Image: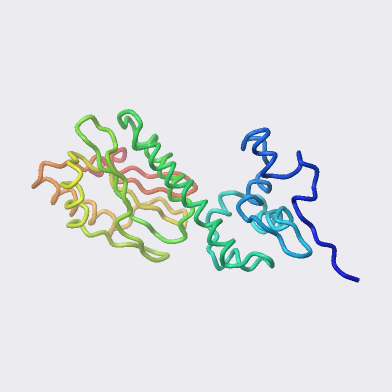
Length: 230
């Protein structure tokens, strides 16, 4: 018996994700419907919505976990080929970059908690340690955000020369350093403390202040400034 072919075009118009978005707006769509639009086409036996639901089921409907999937992870779902997987990964990355751009346009940075909350959302999907820097102007606003180093499971090394060169290019007068701990442990290592001191002392030669060094994980954050380590 030949497998039945499913097509979004055969559904009632109000049930089609694309048409539903046009009629009611993106906010009216479920997570699976939004994913189905990105996936585009299904297979002979399964619709794009079926594939979207299976992708979400694989991460227990956790969008945070979805954001951590790689192209190879997504391709493990039958019917998700390289093109579909790349589209999904690209869309998730755009979401992260939109969040970064939104923070850069905000009012002056006022607390470690505010910055940590932003960075937790931005770095939570990284499986490895990532070292990033916020470059601030005289009004204490973020001019630029940049990931300067990507490391392994247990650590990353940031080059102070790269950080300070970018600071001069961005006319930054202060910096906020940050890296994530995928393990969840928020305590700084000896290497973290030494790197912070090295960058802080080097920045002083250019009249640039290191305002804080934040360690973030899904469990919370650690602020060098709040703990009196700067």
